[in-house]
Image 1 (spheres, rainbow, N blue to C red):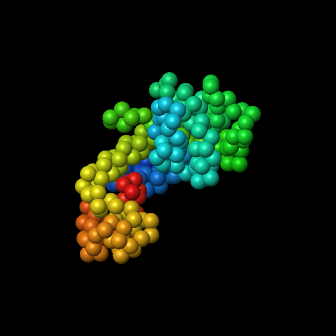
Image 2: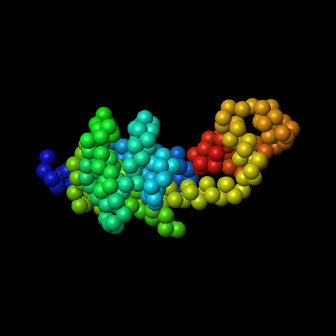
Image 3: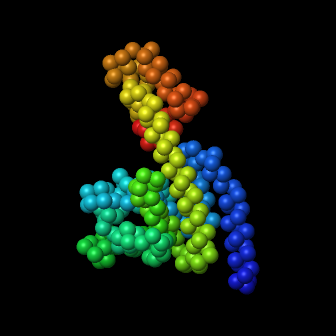
Length: 249
């Protein structure tokens, strides 16, 4: 197939993806997660990760992670390695406004922390994540985030890089809107409502929650009812799920 034919097919697929990405209707992180999975596959990558850019050496990777399709064991191992903040990749992102592309191994070493011969050197070896496309974006209030797409594919050409950058920019704007929704919901929910939802998410019954909080079962039910309404949910389980996606509990 000639290169112009490949470009035409890629552009057509990209247009189809964008037409299905009705970001104005997306309200939750779960929905953004679904769109990010679509975007990752659309551009030929296998995994994605969105995390707040770390400042200082004490902020662990897991505490900065927002959305990810990384296997949970990989997240745990990388978090334990405590190298995200000092990695070469993060360092490069902090010194450019442009997307970067390179080996995912750049997440494993840095100027003051070369682990090329250490136990974590092969951390990504068991996953199809050889290369990574990365970019840094800022929220309206200036908080910096790293967006990474990883996979075995080669570096995108200029036109595809433009498409990918614009798509991730749209998705990040959508993700930021879910932060605002979560903040609004947190402002609306009382401390007791959040406590009830948190204990329910931990598997406690209304009777048990009443004992734990030192209130009546009737009051617990009342808190659940108001929390469900504030979270625009139809029942307790949906309210718990929505509160978890919004990171309220």
